[in-house]
Image (cartoon, rainbow, N blue to C red; front, side):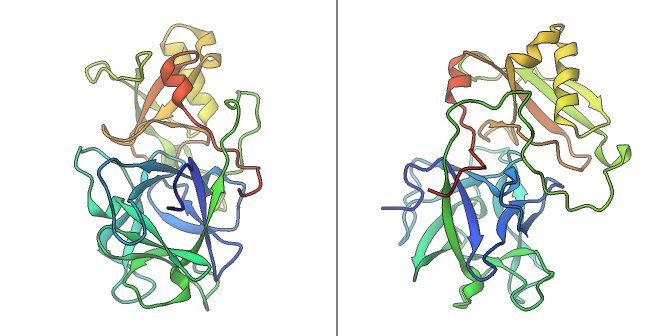
Length: 284
């Protein structure tokens, strides 16, 4: 049985650096290690793809992070780790065809797993000896223990988070608060149909100067002309036309990248299909 079967969410814990987890960095682009287990940034949604049989370890999956982007093995040489390693990043899915670097499978190795991309490289933590290094790269199989990960299933919540719920801990890797210049960006937004379908001609744009999720909620509610709609909708980020909708549960990334928001009304089939991780639950 594949370790991802029947699982909505996972954490990936480095076997060597046992208190460090794979995380979507708060710049919305990078991948790193963090000890902040209760952060949403350490949780990855598992997306199964039909027709991706994989190899020895079972079918390939996509792993989607807190900002709606996917774990991706690039072809860009990494500045840390083995000389033949490449960088791992958060990547959108703008095209129907899925690049090999987005596809992952878990292969059991001893009491843990290695994560192999369809491009043939393996997810690798760094900092075995230089403990301050938090980079994650993708490299060939050298047999290193830094390739080994524990796959921890994260249960889904029984109900959606509400606006009064305290936000889950974020990365907070920056020493100083983000400035307005660092977070100013264009937001594209559109209301989803009850089925979740999006009218690609219906996108509108607004410029915001904050990365606050609550401020984004209020701004979009005012633009839609219904101040109460913030209480009855879920904001989902869509990182590319062919990306799955991801409920936005943390503040926006600290960057100037455009972000696409799909507004899902409560009580619709699209709303019922959304899943939320219970970040405070013990591993299953």
